[in-house]
Image 1: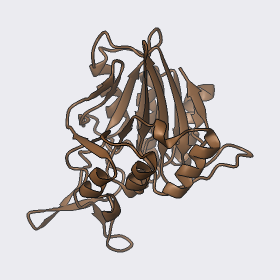
Image 2: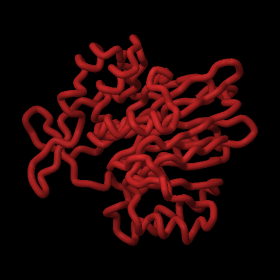
Image 3: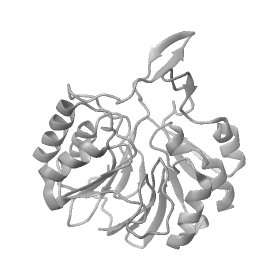
Length: 292
């Protein structure tokens, strides 16, 4: 990330999430989608991070939240899973624009499957294939390295796996040259938003690379700048009590300003985050707007 690049402001709207705000008319779904309004000087860009899995519900929530699909400038997909990618082509078609940057990892379209309780592909579905994205007006930016979207807002690039207690969180496989191999989710990305006078806001999809690894990479990329907020899914829903405890303890040591976790984080991890972070922790909910 450009050392001099900082956003003047950032607004994060939770357009899709597994749960919704109290007394909200919005629709929940298994998945996540965040709408970012990022301003740097005279430049403002609207970035959609993931599209969840139900485009009809996503578009309805956009309508209720006053977000025009055609206002989206860039789409970032954090990883291949259907609950983050399904309906991407429909969203692009609704935008009615051309050459919309769609930022992905080069391995996004690989076969990604589980065999419990039965064999099924859980990655990008055929309705959102490369050719269909292009036909709908998307321009794929396939990149393993950090990519600056505007000064102060960057993707993480591939996350370095350094902790000894974090894992993908689910038994995923792919096929390479006819052989079944473990899928370590190399495409798992995050976004880092550097806010002037505050610190960095980290936005995650599922944190298959490990949420602590993501935070440490952010510290490295931003030269140890403070983490203002950590927002997204942490994929601890099926994690052991030991892993949850180690993860939350490591996050607490990073002195994060606030943590907003939902989607695949899981109840037990949310409870531990609440215990350790106190009022600095908030469960993520559809309809939330967070301003920096």
